[in-house]
Image (cartoon, rainbow over all chains, first blue to last red; front, side):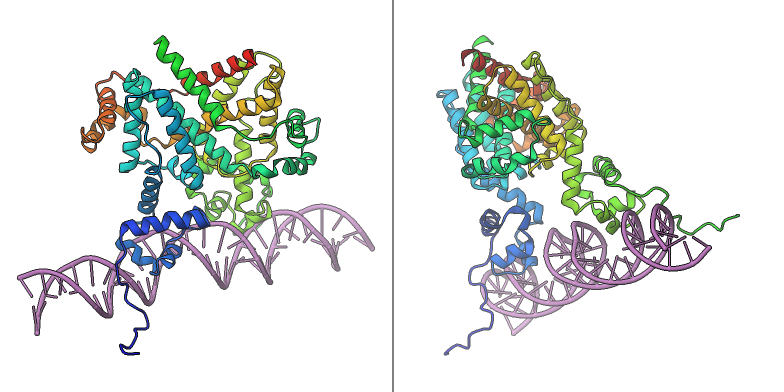
Length: 222
Length: 222
DNA sequence: CTATGTAAGCTTACAGCGTAACCCTGATTC
DNA sequence: GAATCAGGGTTACGCTGTAAGCTTACATAG
């Protein structure tokens, strides 16, 4: 032991807001946003909780930051090409990204998001629709309709209490809670899931195409 | 003072789960779900926090309860009549109810809801679609698409950081944060809101009709 | 009438949360 | 060499949900 090793080696490269946010995303993916505390995040970074406040104003600031990080993963719609293809890709990409970070949708829809990635994301979306011939007002409505589907569908899927591969088993276990006189149709649906004539999978594309087709008709007739 | 008044009059009629839940809904409406603590709720009912645990298993149980109470306010779709009218009314009613209880949508989409009101609500919805000629699988997809819109739209609306009447003013204040070279389209949209050519209002009915029209086509062609 | 059991309240206590206020130390700059 | 300061750490406060145990009021039985 040449140089008496310090009991606690001093941090070689200091923390940064960037590192804190990246660690927060990873940790939230692993343990859930509900378990993400400042102390736990500090621990992950080999640092005390209060040290994080040197790099972020407070926890809300961190939440804003990780939301924007997640949004930056979404593929931007291309501007000037086929709007329908672009919007379909955008929505599908968003859905995939939000499934990768199951806590993110909740944060997005429960706070004002004006981070740079979010602004870019929205700007590109409006641009895509405008250049396709939609008015600003119509672009606004179209964008809102598509994103309602993205967020609403994703939340319902994430919230669904069973995994797809266990739907049939879960439906069977749930049947006793569905008396035929009170919930006849719910029971009928469950039966179909049990006997395999309906896989019970919710289809993101189904609702998305309804909306995109509708928008196309609006564009043509308007 | 005939009968020496007790310093703390004993509760004449005892609490009940029902009363606790109703008080919780009212209180959440008033102070927000984030400020709804067991202590605050107890205070509202003239009782210590721990006494609530005689009527509810824990806080999650209370949250489940108030979600189901809110859901019970939604108009059920009629079964056997015009499905499109029924589904439109159902969605509109749900949207209105969820706006009355701004905290509720978040709870609905973030937990498994299997309370009696929720089961009735879903059963009636599937029933409405089934009797209209949709298959069980298609009813499932249709219901899911409509509710994605209801939840997604409502959350986006509730989350929007400005009140409708201040859109124009807010857009003006926000313009400096939107450099024209980075966010040209977002800026263009804001301009239209400022000069009044677009009111900036998001229209629940717009997306809903896109979906319902699409479903009608699916029903006819299928 | 009193005795007893129970439902429904209260009290205390604990671990975990975000964060305000302050301290310490090593590196950089004049 | 002194001064500044960025980036760590420490302590403490008021809040949270809730476990454990205590108390009181009322219903019913004897």
